[in-house]
Image (cartoon, rainbow, N blue to C red; front, side, top):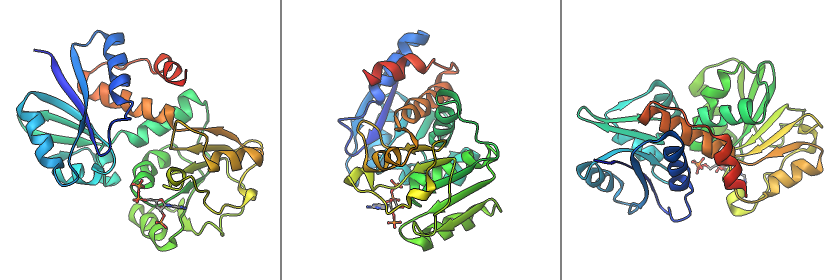
Length: 266
Ligand code: ATR
């Protein structure tokens, strides 16, 4: 029987995940299907349960269900435990295992596709919500000299930094981030609203990479960074890399991401 996989979200119609996983399956010769499932806002757990009952082997989880998936899992990987959110579920006889491949996806895009060394660098992370939290530990594993979390609500950034208890990790307001960084990652929801966080141009130099986790359109953040001399990248590579990491967990084979990223760009 063909193995079934899916992505759960609300909304979900515009998800690129079915296209990405179909490309991975073709490339690696895996016999599987991957569909997009719109779970009701109040019905995520029920929706997952009926998918498992009808042969579901694994699932990705996207907005707004990642925290709920974290609670739903019977077991969590260490990285999912610390991320406080789950984007990848695996179903077997022992129940539901939750993992989080978002941070690994970001790091793979930065270091592999974009060829950025992160060791010894200064990284500025904008935002203190679930998207930011998920990438902190994988970024720290790259041994940056400093990782600064800046957020509109400073107390949220401070709480998040305290959670990890790492001397390289500090928190501040957007105003207080006013010196140069090698990498600036936008993990706020500002781009979704077409807004620009109030950033100082002093954070950007010609060698800065400005990275927006959002993809599919030029954002005010990327355009501001470019105006101030930085190189820019959107989150399409991260999307494909987190999918590849999930695919490898489920199927035991690692797909080649480059042709999939290239085809989604055209
Ligand atoms: P997610 O899971 O996508 O991270 P979230 O937990 O709601 O969603 O967090 C959204 C993040 O985007 C927060 O850091 C939020 O800042 P606050 O903590 O101050 O609310 C940030 N954010 C949302 N809209 C923003 C805007 N217009 N400008 C700057 N930051 C914004």
